[in-house]
Image 1 (tube, rainbow, N blue to C red):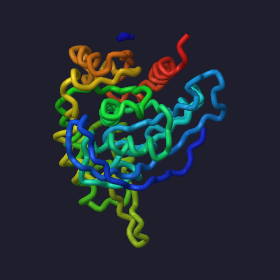
Image 2 (image 1 turned 120 degrees about the vertical axis):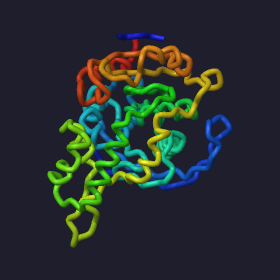
Image 3 (image 1 turned 90 degrees about the horizontal axis):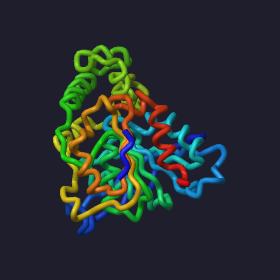
Length: 308
């Protein structure tokens, strides 16, 4: 335990298939995996000094996010590390398909299938918030698929999801029922639900015009009914007992100093699930990648650079 207080291709999809969880998985349910949309950011000059240059990064967004939110930092990391970065859309987000099952076991299965379909060798998973728990779930379920993980402002614990998200859902549903045609109209509706312009812009980034030539009405790409039903369980973590499963490879936990998602009291549990973990504090809140991108970049580059 260590405590430390390019170019984007068009999105691609791979075939859907059904996955049956193995006995090591916490939920013995049968889920259909969905093909994940992604952008590939490749380094202009692949690193020749980095022995891990052929190990790509899979970047996973959080709730209401998408691959486009991680576009800038993905390009920067591809440049600085000389590695390819796959920024993906999780199920029910961005350009990926919708599915009624929205939980971490299903999301991890999707990412595992993505790794296999694209024949990615020893990838590092970087996940923020919901994406962090999806990454942790996959690393504990199928450690052979992953070389390391970077969990951004989340921990392997059951935690109550902030009430903000339920409020966002209510505001977004009001926008859809109002048949808005301009983002300014949507912003006016959402403002009573969220005073922060930055967060409103983030949420409204999910708006699009469906392919109906005669209609200018905007809708959300995120299926609000599915996400709304899933909210009660998105604070949970599928694994409960670190004596039964561990990820014995490198793990970095990056937390915001102004965030409450990774309090000091959960650090011992992190060490039990991820005994080779490092912890870095970044001066920021929960949205630390956008709030303090340079500090986040430094933490990731130091963690993934070859050790002397």
